[in-house]
Image (cartoon, rainbow, N blue to C red; front, side, top):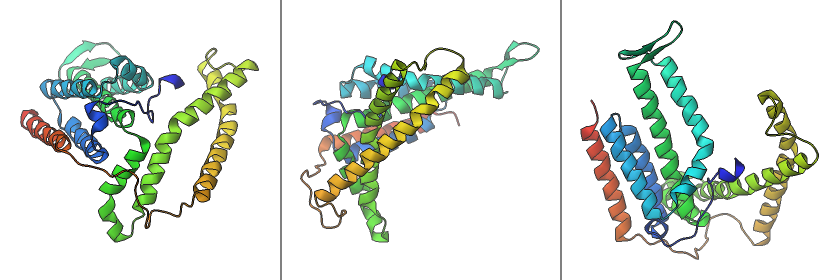
Length: 266
């Protein structure tokens, strides 16, 4: 399962999404989240799904790779679907047992919320898959720049987010190494009752925490050795350039949001 997690991964490429300004991609992700929550009927969810597939096609990231990264999320989606079906009691009764009644509203709500989660994970994953961590830092810092006027540490916040994204795949690789080392010593992570499996994961925490603190300390020492003293007065090697395609992308999302608001069930 650890190999299937794609959050924090970056795939080099020359697609339209790869060449977009990181500020435009961050703004587009924010607008897309609003768009997804505007959908509330079959037509609007279908439009959002088509747009998500179109965005994946523009990124030139394989659908198989996206599906691979969705596997860890599927369990959460299934749990959410079952929870909505069991707890929502709206609409006509589709199936009646003594201990359970399946309502039309519960089934519809479960499908809609599950699709919403899938769409959000699919599209937001493209941000890290098509954008370098340093570009995300620069874009986030630029977008939050006006907050510097109220003395907020924008540069430090953006740097923290970038390091967190960069360390996700690193920590997953470290976890996999520890698991393999313990499996070679007789530990079982994939067989036995669920409680036994959970207990088997507890010994992973101590070496993983120690390794994480060691990596954080090494990173801090490396940054100090290179003269890092915060964002004040720093110059940039890469200059962000906003182009016409960035404006078009945001305009398309605004049009999509307006269209969904008109088509949604009020």
